[in-house]
Image (cartoon, rainbow, N blue to C red; front, side):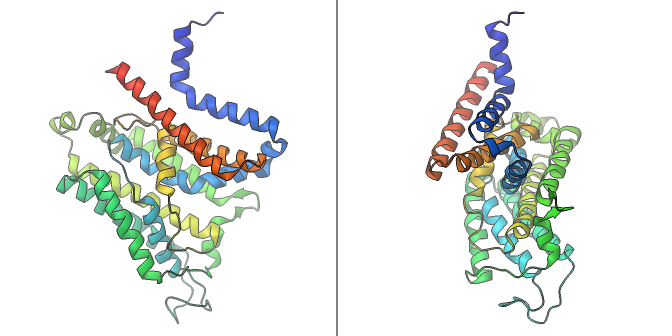
Length: 328
C-alpha cells in the first residue's frame, strides 16, 4: 500500500518526536551495545526523573501560555529546608541541634509546602498584578535561590535519615524509587489535565484567555492553581533529589528550569498556548535523558551535549510555529 506524501507528513507532525526517540534508541543500541541493558535503561529513567517531574508541572504552565523560570531555585530552597528537617540526630552541622529523627513524612511535607507556596506567589503575582509570567518567575528564581543561600549560609545539608535516602534508592533492590514516583506523577498529571475541570480550564486559558473569561472561567483562580501545582512538583522533585544525592546544596538544580522547559517544548507543548500533553512532556524528557546517556556511552565531549540540546529545542519550536501558522 502506497502512502501519500501528505499522509506521511501528517504522521510525522503528530508523532515526530516519538519517531526521533525510537531512532535514537536504535542507533545507540547499535553503536553502544550496553545501551539496552536493564541497568542502563533504569539509569536513563532515573536521570530523567528530577527534571521530568518538573516538566509535568511546566506543561500545565506553558499550556496556559505562561512560563516558570523559578522551578530550579524553588527545588534548591525547598530541598535545603526539607533536608534540615530530615537529618540524623548525630549529624555534623545539624540545623536543629537536639531535635530527634523525625518521620520521613515531615521533610516531604516541608518540601511540598515550600514548593507550593512559591508557586502560589508566582500565580498570585501573575493573576492579580498582571505582570508577565517571565518577570514574576524570574524574580522568584532570584528570591528562592537567595533564601536557600541565606538559610544554609552557602553550605550543603547532609547526613539525612534513611527514610529520605530511601526515596532515592531501589524497591526490592531492583526498581529505582524515583522512577516509580515519576510514573505515578505522570498518571496523576495526565488525569488532571484530561479528566478534570482544572485541566480543561488550563487549555481554555491558554487557547484564548478572553473567551475563557467570557465563558465563566475564573482565570485568576486557575492561574494561581496552575503555578501552585508547578511549584508543588518542584517541591516533590526536591525531596527526590535529596534522596538520590543524600544531601542538598543551596546551589543545586541550577539550570534545571531550562531542562524542564526544554522537555516540555520538545514534547510538543506549544508556547502559543492551548496545546500540549503529559505524554509529550515525558517523551521530551526521555529524548534529553537518552541523548545525555548516549553521549556518555559513546565518549562524546559533554560540551557537544549542550549544542545538541539547543539544536533540538530550536527545531522543536520551529516545527511548532509552522504547525500553528497552518492552523491559523
